[in-house]
Image (cartoon, rainbow, N blue to C red; front, top):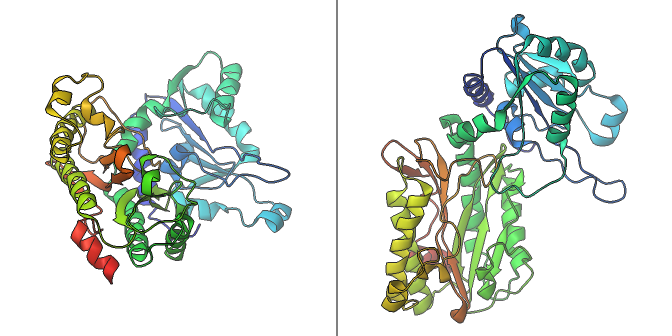
Length: 429
């Protein structure tokens, strides 16, 4: 890992929160992700299972976690399972965690090697009445590959068919949505690194640079500040390409008179930032560009004013739609007749703002959290309205990350410039 060691109390608190939600006399088992082959003898870069990471902070492959709070033997109430270090493998692939290192990262005192787990696990399962197993229950999941979690479920049901099986993901969806102050400290570090990258870009962007050169600058700034890297595939979209929401080719020239939309974020300590800024390639907004930009910024500020505990994302989106409608009328994008005759399921403003306004953010960029229930204090979300005008070949989006408080929210990106005049002044320097 490139980042400085995190406070193990993050993961101690997360496990405590999970255990408090478990049924009595139940055991919970979590697996790491698979190592996946790419081509030849190569592997894709390893990405840890988000739930296992949230509970342990361990990023090494072939890791497991066993939680059995009612185990009669106290030392086996939480157990971290690591792969036994192998001298030959380490010569090729590098260092593997020792027991004391696993304890230092996770705060778990009992560490066992993977090759001896079976003999320990079977009697624990015989003592338990219920078994919590994990799956990916992110609503956006699209992968149907039989990954390790699903193979493990089949194996357990075959070996222990009469146990009562439970979904750990149902608990984690609620818990992971609420960020502790210690988690937010790590996310703030990711955000601060992202700010440094953005400020670097303001001094770099000019007509004639290519989108990939901008991406190279931000990745350089991420790595020199100990980030793991990009939290997701960075979007560097100049001109009309900004209307493509997940544009990641990043291979075209940024031309004089265009805007460039940049959606990127550093990952630090397993947690992600998610920033979007749109700036003029030549450092100066045209009158129309600034008019549309300021309308987007007004929508952004309105979002921030109403995103607080008690509102649902569905109600929030409807209210933001009302505000977007007002702004789009002022911009001449829609007419009063368009609004009067709009389809309630596909409102007029959707022609120019066709994505969600906010999503949960954390260990996953599109993190776990509710859409239909009221938002709660401690949730951390993005705010990212956009305006996309095909006839003007223009796309603008402005995105910050906010942490919900009892009565409102804290903008964790408040120090990152987003006023049009400030952006122009910084680019002029």
